[in-house]
Amino acid sequence: MKQHPEIGERILAATELEGSQHASLAIRHHHEHYNGLGYPDGFKGRAISIFSRIISIADSYDAMAVTRSYHHAKTHEEIMAILHKETGEKHDPELMRIFCGIIESGNLKTPNT
Image (tube, rainbow, N blue to C red; front, side, top):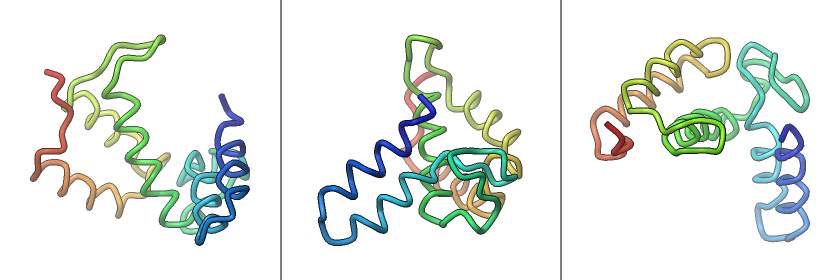
């Protein structure tokens, strides 16, 4: 499981599509944590690309919104409580503020109740 960012990076980089090298690094670092405790490289704060920090928030929301073999789908309210708790540790506080404004004002919330 912890290898998927590096595997995704290699797959995308191998396509040689325009921008694939840049995008592959965003994929590689989407599990880096804002506090430096993520993986695979232990990047911290703004050393993590903004693209990776955005993907991290969206990926976390999506992962909790769907049923997986190891958990049931959570409601929007449950997901947001967890994301708020992780802000500053896992997620960039400034990007979380922007994400919250977008998700709360639109129709992008999980339909789970």
